[in-house]
Length: 102
Image 1 (cartoon, rainbow, N blue to C red):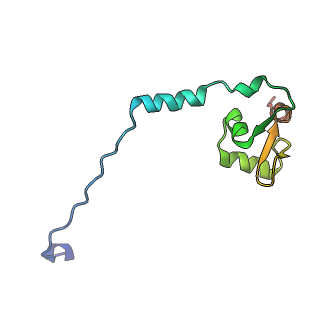
Image 2: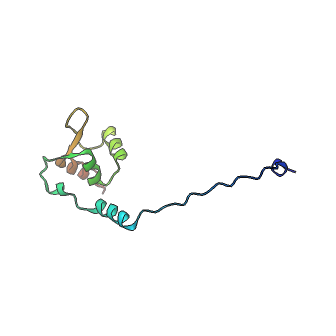
Image 3: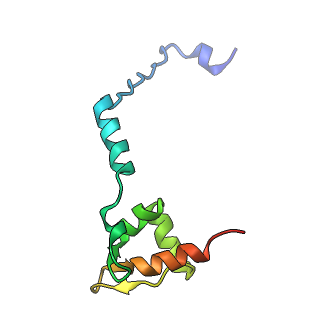
């Protein structure tokens, strides 16, 4: 006989939370925002992208972007202010060209 069989108290059953899904329209909007063409792609090579714009342009997450820049393998970084960085569009293009395989 196990300890559970001798226990007179009934076992509590956990209630499972129903998983709510976002409305379809919200999911579609989010997908469309991710696919929209970026307006700064037609800018000159001297135009500066914010860090988030740079990540979005290259299709990487912010954490991955910080890891790339910290490793020294990323494009040249422009210090916009004490706490803000940016990447020139031309520097990003040369960085992408240097990463081409084959």
